[in-house]
Structures are given as structure tokens and as C-alpha cells.
Length: 204
Length: 260
Ligand SMILES: [Zn+2]
Ligand SMILES: [Zn+2]
Image 1 (cartoon, each protein chain N blue to C red):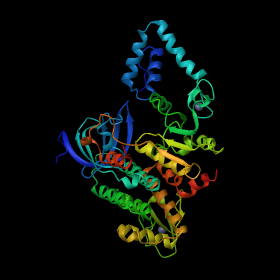
Image 2 (image 1 turned 90 degrees about the vertical axis):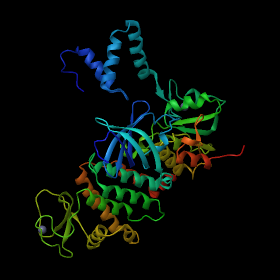
Image 3 (image 1 turned 120 degrees about the vertical axis):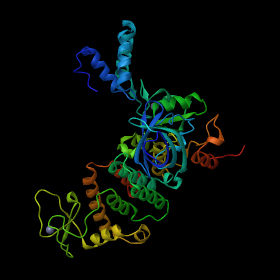
Image 4 (image 1 turned 60 degrees about the horizontal axis):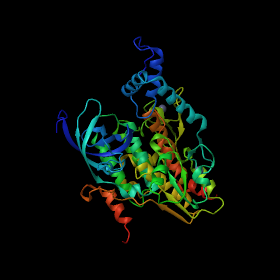
């Protein structure tokens, strides 16, 4: 939607609405709502918001090793001695690293590929940070790659692609077990999830 | 079932999904009686979603929908066939995604086309078999035929004369064969060998059970691939990005990277 020619909307406001409209998941209506909310926001808060946006552009970079977003490269996780450098867990997005770190179970390192293969949208392997992952394997010190992409069709395709690429180079390529969610009900589970949960079953 | 009912039931093959907001998807489905339908499915992207595992692309699913203004709304969905063999084999999957993308691109919304539906369902079933040679070219030519772009393979698309042996070329923009005497201005003309012409005619009139046992040499295969791609491009009017992925996952491509 173009607000530029609406005389009732002040120019700076229409610009802000358009900027919001470009963000993922924000439609024209939400963009308007956000913009009008900001008009009523105290000046201090608005300044702090604007500065924090600039700060991420200024100070946030990609880690040379794992491609996660960081202030320093190599990042905290890549440079810490306690992390097991022989394991790399491959995830789609930086937020997935946070989720996995919250479990406090995993002690290896990560690799963020920044997206998934999505043929219909024209996103192929070369658009992701997969080459950077290959580079990390050159010294032969990596023992295990854990594929932790989402259990969606795109996540699965990406995992299969990386598996095909890495299985001749790395000893062990594993995939996060895909199964029933906690609190899920067998009765409502789909056939695909159930059959995979059966495949990935283990002794107790 | 009348199309004016507000709530309706249908099976459908999920062609693709687009994320909407934080947790929803817009699905593009292909159904037997309503053709291509676009519908919203709420909450499907939540990890704990009950519906998420039933609404992935490359699934045949049974739906209960409410007719909407612009998009319909999915109330219930139950997967009938997940085509697991396809989704767990990268080569098969790349072909399936291209097939679905083609159907999505060449069909219009709410135009019922049962032929396309049956062709799509059969093709996915055939893709689950180990041997699926010729499936993609066969599907392409049949899809063109069932969606109103049947290629002309017997008469010159310019002068209308019967094509004679070894005096033929191909004109994708006019949708068929062209004789050696015609040279219309400003259209692209591709070469067409006698073998390729025979194969195209055979594909057009045969069932896949007969097509699948045919052995086609590499050169003919390449020529067919180029012809059909050009034909589809002129029917659809745009490049299909999913085509590239078939090559991305082809053994040779992956092998060349393995040399690290
Ligand atoms: Zn790092
Ligand atoms: Zn002619």
C-alpha cells in the first residue's frame, strides 16, 4: 500500500508506516497501529528504540567460525575452552542456538546456516552458509555433525542435502530425533510423526 | 457438493506453503473438484501444533474448510498419504517439488480440472517407485495437454501443413513443430531430431506404464529437456526456481563438492 499520496497522513508518519510494512509478518494495518503507538511514546523511549536499531547495524557482526551473530569474532561459544570443538550442531537461525543452549545439555559448538533450502522460493544450498561449514571440516578434527534443522519439509530437505554432502567427509552425521512433542497425545499425532518416532525409538 | 456451501470437505494435494504471521501458513492445494484452492491454516508452525504434521507440501490430505472472502480457512486436516518415500529421498523430493511448482504455476485458482488432479496424484505415486525414468518429461507433456497447452506435434504451427520426416524443427512460443520451409519473423526456433519427435508423440498418446520402459539416450534426453522447458516457459511466462534444485542435488553436483 502506498501512503505517500494520502494527504491526511503527515509525511514522516507515512514513511514510518511504510518502513514497518516492509518487516516480516507486519501487514499495513499492524504497521499503522505501530506507527501511531510510537507517536504517543515518550521521547526517551523512542530515542532508545532508535539507538538500539542503529546499534545492531553498527556492532553486530557474523562470527567467522560459526556464522552466528555476535559482537566479537570468534564468538563467545566458539572461543570458550569448555566447548567440545569436535562436535558441530547445525541450525537454521541464531534463535535456534539460544533454544538449544537453554537445555544446558549440549556442550559442543554450532553452525548457523541462516535459512533453509526452499526450491519454490529459489533458495538453494549456495544461498546458505554451507560452504563455510565445509571449510570448518578441512582440518579433520570434527567427529560429529548434528543436524538440528526444523522438522518441516524445508528443514528436512536441508538436512538431507547436508547429510549427502558431509557423510563421506565426517565420521558421524546425526539428526535430532523427530518424535512426539511433550504433552502431545498419541491419538492426535500424524502418521509421519508417529512413524518417525517409532524409527527413532530407543531402549529405556 | 455445491460450491456455494460455506463449509466444505475435500481431499487435496498440498503444492506449497507460505508462512503467514508468527504461526500460520497459507497453503496452496490442488483438489479434484475445485482445482487450486488457497487457504489459511492457523497455528500450523507451532512445534506442538496438532495440525502441523498434516499440512506439509507433498502430502495428500483430507480437509474441512470454510469458504472465505479471499482465502478459505482450514478447520480440520488429516493426512491421507505423506509420500514418506519421496520426502526421505533427496532426488525424489527435488523432482516432486518441481512437479508441484509446475502445477501451482500453470493452473488458476478455483478452476476445477480433474485431469490435472489425477495426473498429479499418479505422478507422485509413480515417483515412489525405484525406477522412475522419463517421469518428469512425461509429466510435463501430459500437464501441458491437460491444462490447455497441448503441444502440436503433427502439423506445422506456421503453415498448417503435415510435418514430413526429417524436415522439422520446434517453436516453443507457438507451442509445437514447425516445418523446414517456414521462417516466421522474431520467434525462437529449436532443432528437433526425428527421435525426439517420435518420443514426444509416443509420450503424448501413451500411459506411463508404457513410457517408463522406454530407454532414451542421453542426447535425446537433453534435447527433450530443453524443448519441454522452453514450452513450459512460454506457457507459464516465468522461470521456475525449483527446476534448479533438481540439478543441485543430482549425484554429479554433490560428488564434485565431495572432493573437498
Ligand atoms: Zn562462533
Ligand atoms: Zn510450415
